[in-house]
Image (tube, rainbow, N blue to C red; front, side):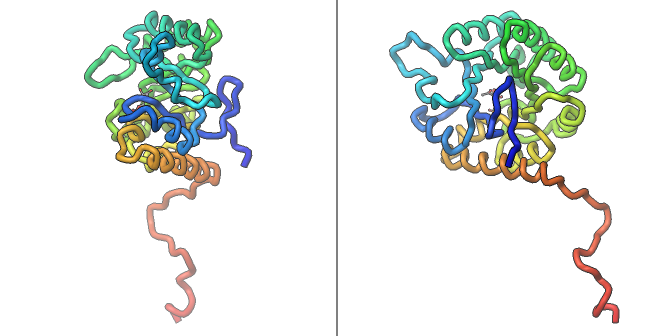
Length: 256
Ligand SMILES: CC(=O)[C@@H](O)[C@H](O)COP(=O)(O)O
């Protein structure tokens, strides 16, 4: 099936992106990545320490994956830009997930600062994937600022509450011409499948996999659900009907 996702000139076969935080034991991350099928892995730059003798998150990420460092911890555009440049200087490549969050209770992204950071980093040659509150005008501004994809939240980070913003994400999918990657709050494989059935280009999942009792099996479940959701989307889902419609003709022996 020729259904590749292209971001920043890279062809991606798998539409599940995963995060590396909250795992009870980092040693299982390689197996999680393998079973998830994911080729794009995000990590907070704070967790990359090339000088440390202690374990480094990069040691657990397979080399054939694209690193997607995120700017978690940034409270404004300038801080996000600084973290992105640091990530590139440390050898993490030029993909960056912008997270600008100054609200500690809901961890909602600051859309205004996110647009500013996107513009600055796209000009510097980064492949910019901004995490955002789903809003059409903001998404258009992010496209104009040079984003390679936009990452609207389904629900606040770590809540596992699924697609609470479904109708707003649906508008972005309809109106925005760059990939829409649903990020945050996806709590179970059926949420991921739902996003894919709607036409999302990909999903990013961290908490639901990392905090499952068996993260490796859960990664596999998400891999399957993302594939199933995508296959359903490209098969063109049949429309909903208000009234019942018999699956086989009701004429014939019942009425005779
Ligand atoms: C790891 C990462 O980037 C998170 O900030 C992301 O938004 C995932 O959210 P969940 O942990 O809710 O899947």
